[in-house]
Length: 525
Image (tube, rainbow, N blue to C red):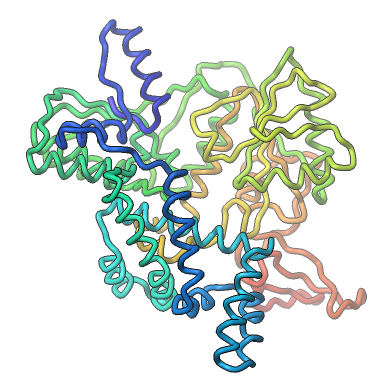
């Protein structure tokens, strides 16, 4: 049995043993890959951890890069404008002085708090790119060719980033060779190669894959190689509605096109699991209607084991962060039960910051480093904050969604992926915001009893407007502003040149959306 986490594999193994009395070989994909690599190499390789890679490869590599003047042009070109302008001031000096000043000024700037996030992001990008390269068995030159073929308007920028990544990638590969290490991507690709070369032979008759919606092409190739060597019965369990890991390489086409993907071994059978004990009928109906607006997904009609009428959804909030904070506190005070479990969910880790800032004047909460939160008025209540991605598979009595705003870091998020990383990810779906829709569905369905949508009415999410159209009764006391007819974001009234007598309506999605309407109702784009 294969799963994506050790805990999931162990849980499934224990449940199968309890139900059947049989013991199964439960494993994660990576541990299976390591097992195959070990057997085929006649020795267990040393596993390169992320922390070790950061400490021994990425930090030293970027340190050397910053000390090499010939690397600066590409690096400076990728810097934000406000940092680049500092460097250009040095160019007014003589060439020799400019080079020295550029190096010293950049070094000083790099140490400042405003520049550090950029450098950290560049390092994180390098790690992500190399991880995907390794997963797909690509080297720098192969990625350069891919960029020339598919880079589009980002080809030039990608070239500069590849120039910076080249020495980092070489340092990474040298470390693997010199220390005889294997990384997590190498566990999958190495195992696939060992199977295809015949260095490893398997004896499996039955293979079960859990959470199949998270399948990536490298993992698929591993299972396919096993099956091509010796066929077995393949049984997969997954939910396409919860496929939310494209950024990590998951390819939803592997579940949506299951019959063709595995068609070389004959017809496949699809069985729908439609009964859920997780939540009640009202949430089933609302979440199902929301997710099935994406017509590319499997059409399913879930049923709850509960038969009583329930009220599992409610919108709370108001105008501004303080109103959202007040609504959260009021609802927590109203929750009944000896020790109800509560989950606060965000799209990003930063989604908890408005609550923290609002609480600074009241001190009603204690925010712990591990994500747990103590509500001082009810210290026995279990409260956690985490991102929606991290919450997948979990469930709590009450869930408060803090990710109900629009904008770049809202839901749906409009932050574009790093173009170079985009070249390495599975093809995006045709429906706009398809994965963000599935992410919001996952967020909605983490509760046992009730989900609360915490809405700042200054800028509600487009998904909140959708919910309002189908479930207006859950919005009592929380009116929404008019929705932009061009992009779906909220509209707001603004003053022309600061003159209160001259107002116009504009989209909060500016500058991405330039919709406006003057006082006469005339529109412009």
